[in-house]
Image (cartoon, rainbow, N blue to C red; front, side):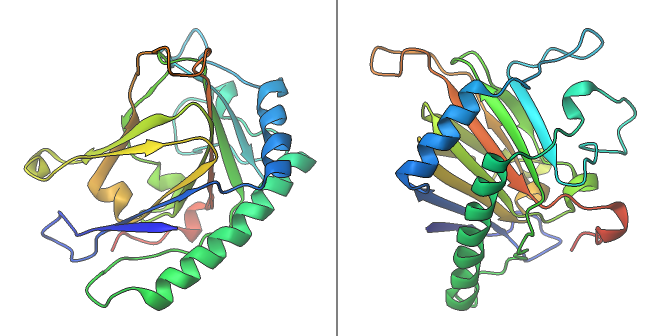
Length: 237
């Protein structure tokens, strides 16, 4: 695991953000099992007629069947939880074990000047996004505080075509601070933690295909997080 610490860009706090990347995260047998699951899963959904267009398809899983964000005004089918199956649970258990190890190692080795609120999640949800080609994307956003709290540890597992994830300062008065671009290759893990959701927006921009890319340019992103009930969510640091 390679860690990148981003110092706070918010003058009201000294606590910054933490980015982690790990390549070749799944062993071959588990990778092939998950790859087939991603391609053959029948539950992908896009936007409904009453929604804004969404340039990707998705499936939401939460172990207690909770809606993605109960505080939202609308209720849309693609944000209703599907039931975990054996393969997804197997993958999640493997990711949980690896994350526990990564975070424990970081917590014991980090330098004293790297101030970060590092949550150790008990993963209970997975959002699967299917990027069918380079025109599929996700706009700059931050993950819902009402579902995951103010300083969540977000774990993204990528299969398929390499795409670019962009981080940009979240507030207009932070625009003097740099943005960051990370390549997210096949079979890799990408972690955002600390104040990453308070201080930055993240996105997957559109990307043109070239002859060197996979023919269908398809990518699957599985985002593992600890979904929280409202009474579990603490105020921001």
